[in-house]
Image (cartoon, rainbow, N blue to C red; front, side, top):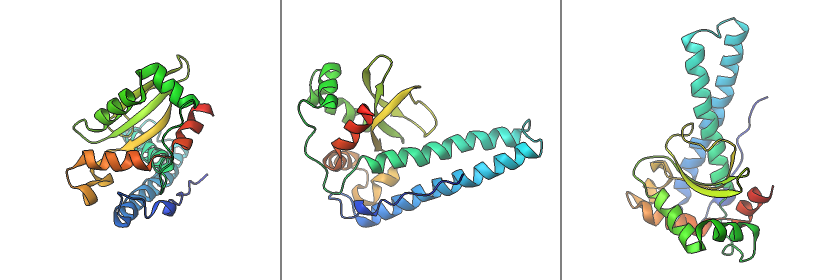
Length: 195
């Protein structure tokens, strides 16, 4: 089965994000989808040719995880954004109440989430829900395939690789994060929690 890149053109015109930045980012995402499909075909061929015990197979398999997570994380990132953002998270919603329970206040959660996004380096800031313990965590993911909390569901995903903000903000990551926070579609994050 081949993956098809999703269309996120509805995000064009999002305040705080130039159309050029978004178009560049969409193109990068489409490259992940293309590479997932290519690597899937290569791995199938290697397996069918009896080359599954080779270093080439091992490295291709590792690369597949990186490309796949790059594809999926971008889908989650673009998916939790809206051109017009949304109303602030609704007091009384399940996600709001969970944030209050786990962080003490929405402001404390937001301060922590932004601090994770501001950490030096490239990567992702993700609000995860651990279903087993019913607990929320703000997590730093260094690379697409490293640092994920096993079994946890990503509720809110923020891309903090330079390609996500440098064109519009240069090195002012904090300004980018402020723009992102205004573009969050809280209904999507709520839906991820309750799914």
